[in-house]
Amino acid sequence: MLTLLTFPGDDRQPSFSPFCVKAMCLLEMSGREWEPTYLAEPSKMPYGRLPVLKTDSELIPDSGNIQAWLVARGADFDAGLSAGERAWSAALVRMVEEGLRYGLVHDRWLRDDCWEAVRGRFFEAVPAAVRPIIAGTVRRRVRKTLKLQGTAQFSEADRLARLGRELQAVRDTLGEKDYLFGSAPGSSDAAIVPVLDMIRDLPCKTGLRDMVRGDARLMAWLDRARASMYPR
Image (tube, rainbow, N blue to C red; front, side, top):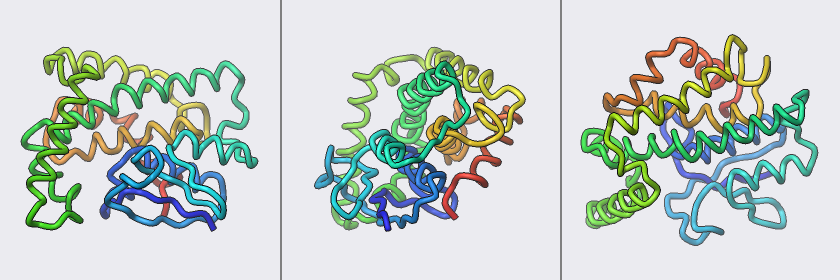
């Protein structure tokens, strides 16, 4: 039995981290038996973050490494794809994880209206006496990271224009198909769906959330992928 060390979630999301949900989806799609163990503090984990896959003999950190471990043991998440399609899939995942995901982080952490709603959920396990201090410290760290990365430097209009182009690339790839590269979900669906699903679940109205919710084709794909990939 494999164990996935992961951040907790709630009734709507199996984890608050899109990388953790990606790892869950990949494990589900691989057909292997696994169970989650929820951690609130990942500092003692390899790389100091989650998810981490625990096997009988090792800890495998990072959703990308978990995917590679599963593939090395026979999982083929992209069966039937050509070499060019596999490259396209990998590039699309990289774009979303380094673009739209940061848009999600920005709206969660830096918008005061969203922050008020998510702060309690993210820091629920922290003792109440120090919770405001810890939450404030982490929020300042996230703000600094997003400024260095660039997302927090853009105006709202520029940020939405950039993220809108990335969303259009996902939309164009999906086309009229059930999933990004065909009739069955693949590795790109496992990585991208959690990001967009969490954007549409943002607890406050944002321009990015409106772009996702306003696209019926994307919304139908997210519902379909949740039903087929998310752990039950």
